[in-house]
Length: 239
Image (cartoon, rainbow, N blue to C red):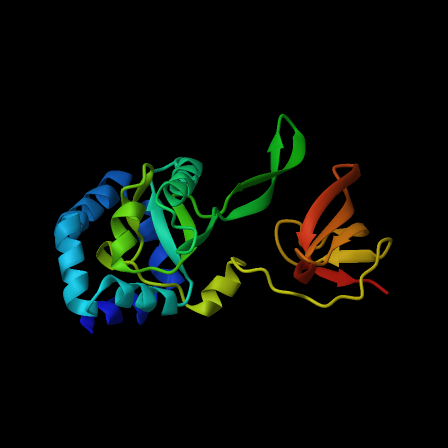
């Protein structure tokens, strides 16, 4: 069926999201694009039920179809500075409409950066992809309105606002899913950080959370020991 092919078989490339052209696009322009898409997508609840009944024979058949969908990651565009607001409001929508079995995770990508202010350096977190949030869900068109009408969200980041799932390799690249990493690290081991803002720094392991894959490390930085949390995959054990 054409609608189901649209919902499940196409992927959104990270390149579609992270080009300078897309990042430089004004929020008003993005919002206008998605308003136009919304107008083309709009249908009443009665029309939706009638269409689903025709396509799937009954509501039970549609539920079985939705249950069979894989949970995939989608990219949503937000107004500038509204990433946290959009996340919180979407969480409220999930609770209000009992979408816990459809929307599973919402992530605002963050990164550690070293900033210098008044001659002093400090480690801070900032949004690595401003104006975007990432949502893991079983998408079908019955929740389109719930998502795009959430305050702070201007629409899906696919071409012309279409909800296209991210390829698995890009999900891994952005570390949206936790990858279980086997390690022989122990508290007290000396390590080198080999990825991220602290690449090349050395430190000592103070704690290991194998379930989350996060390691606490004391790093010699800014002329003092600074505790930081990094992923197992970002560390190399020193002999």
